[in-house]
Image (tube, rainbow, N blue to C red; front, side):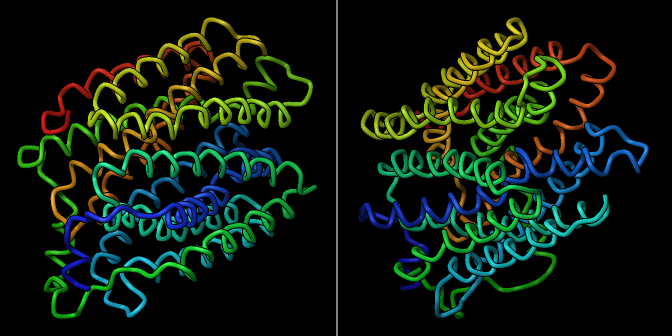
Length: 413
């Protein structure tokens, strides 16, 4: 079993395995996006008057600190899962512990009575759910052969957006902040059960675990761009495109309320999320299948990034409710292709089989770091440097840079 755990997989996974792993992914994203899209913003409005901060600044501070926790948590737990020798496998214990811890942390947020409890609760959500996410992500290169990773990545991408929709829907429909957090907590636990109860994990024997020392463990998180240039360029392109997307999403509720004066901004967020999701679902699996069949990754990632940048620029120029709906649809089409094929590309540039969890955790920093950088960029732009039009122009330029730099990756077609 150890040899199988560290070998390059060759046997295709079945539809049931993919569906169960995707549902686990949905559960994790529900735990993130219910708070990010609705609940944290509503709490920021409630708590801001007593802090001397605007609601935008308070929300930026809390989400930024939480994202900083995520930066460390994802590669840390990925590395721990690489070294886990439990009889249930390397990944399953962390999926279970992370989902359970995430649910408890969401319940803590439900009872938050002020800024500090809100911040601590969100940091704990990021810590625990990243443990589960690191393990779920690492299961793909553990079990899925290279030429099936596009389609599996497509289903995981679909799971992410379904999680965003479900989390937003639960947070909106639950009837209050506390009820919204409780609904997300229940879903986070229930969604991982089919995978952990039905599908076995690959076990690493104690004799084959790398020798432990804190120095070697810490040094393992640094991957030299000179030694692994494709890994470095792939990381940078993902970071820039995710930063562009984070700049668009962060203040969406406030954009609808304060700039477009939408009569029901929370419902507006749900509508835009649904439009984006339908468009994404139309392309995310198809893009992965197409990429697998032609055996190429870079053109799909590059042109989807270009379309995302163009759509974001359109949001800066056409600041109306119909414009927001059109942009949501275009972003969904492009993001669907990007999510599935970029994930497959990332698994193709991993340096070592024994460090899949850790290395994917390092790559996933490119998902979390934009959550830190986006508030730092967005807050001063919105409040002092030109407002939402300038914010979305900056986001478009950042995304275009990420798309262009995909061409620097040499070892993947």
